[in-house]
Length: 77
Image (cartoon, rainbow, N blue to C red):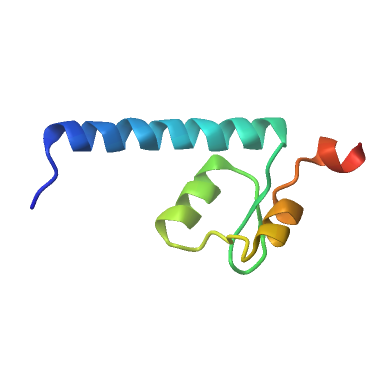
């Protein structure tokens, strides 16, 4: 069954919000993204490309998630 117009619109706005959050995190340096090869992704284009190609490195466990996604300001505190 095809998605309704309202479902497509909701998905579109959710994607826009995700891109805005990623862009803000990259601009502020509050989150770092890596591809599955471990390379640091420094631009919005690189991160979106990794997402679309299923190449974005995701933390395996909660402990790893806290370590990988901790803001630099929190590490310095």
